[in-house]
Image (tube, rainbow, N blue to C red; front, side, top):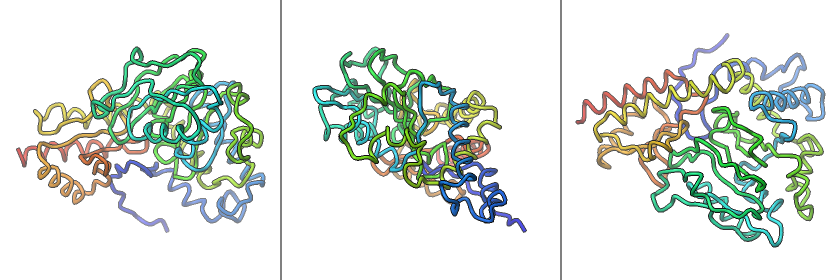
Length: 365
């Protein structure tokens, strides 16, 4: 018998909401996966039933993101944080420099790791303005001889997001898309490498997706440990060692859900609708709510704001929690409030929170 469960309004920044239909399917298949008599977590990663799951997830990702044949799809482990090291280890060759666009905490961490392997510098930074904006493409300063240019497409802590990406020509462009991959159509051909932790829009934590251009892959350093070479995983279809099989299964089901919603065009419209429900209250609040990000840099994934006073902010967060809204506190490094409206967060959740914000202002103005 199926249990009736009260689902909460989940605005956690990650791990984040998953589609209810995906969770229900996983629940139904948990003990006996497609007649195998085993859970998908118990299958050998060398078995045919798992290989079908694995290859279908790769195929679905290629289809949804319109990934060209020039690029490989890899499923890795270690999160985006390991990519901060793997990228310079593989591609920051001696005598070369790499440039990093600084837009928040995650780009700072990526930059710090890269410094351990070679010479890196800032192509642009908005730190002086407390990371309220994304640099304009004209503000980027990098050298045509750089090993690569690195950017973070969406900044979860500060609530900013790139709307358009630079064309860096012959300089390889690398993007950390952990928090907005699959949220809108992108031109994958612009990028030499895209990486993303799964736990925002792709599935549960444990899987890291890497999309890498084949010719860029061929230029990688080979004098590094086997498991830290992208080529190791590309040659073995991401099956060199035991992959996070359950996470990849769930990722494949999330991709099926995204396809059934209408693909990335439909998802992008849905995400704009959700974000507008919150931003319209902020903009119409006469300063009661104060958005952190500049309007032209606002994220559709992470909506950040403050209230007029710390006391009012605490009251707001306490009442939001009591009303069943989870994960609304801002990141511990900057405080404030944050609504993370990733793909699987339903429109109804954002509508309910918008109404809560409006009522709270009426009660406390």
